[in-house]
Length: 258
Image 1 (cartoon, rainbow, N blue to C red):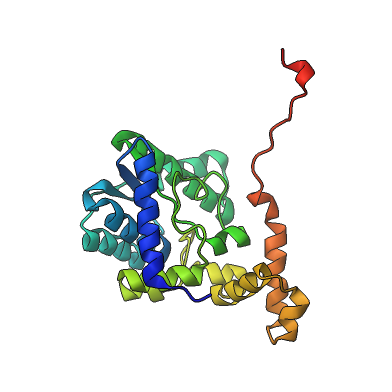
Image 2: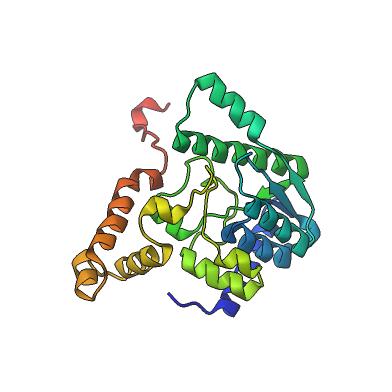
């Protein structure tokens, strides 16, 4: 899973500038969460388009950790990009009362979709494209919200495993504390991705990378990988397969179309 970080950096910078050039826009908006994924995309975009053409959108909920708030602000300050902050707490809390629900997962998904609607609002306001920040590990593990963080116009890191995003972050000069900290969706206090998974991103990426190369689960156990972890990772991939299928549309027979 090693990468040529310097070459990858240049390739993705060219990708962003090329895709934006093909669009009707010259700017992008990006949700800045304080995590490694949004930081890497912001650093790439600032180099590709210039800092004035990258607009950071901070969208904290009231339970967001102070660490993530500080790190999101650090990315904005380090890059010197313009930004907007929108507290989503009133919107989510009003909905929570309306539906009388306390389920953390469902309300977390509501937060994600609320943020995406705000991103597209500002994209329209500033005549900008929306940059995605989801990586390949999250996609394969189904760790995303349909029509939430899976909605974007351009996503430069969608082909990278989480561990590769971290390597790229080091190359880009993302602050070390952001590179090293545990990833979290910040749905509730103390929540982390890996705690929910029951395995680490490194373990998942190792397994998923080998599966992509044609190895079976049995092969991976034979070469020494933990059987329980292999099973957990592949079960999660199977259980979330429906999230990676495009919405269904009918194929209409010719005789009905006149």
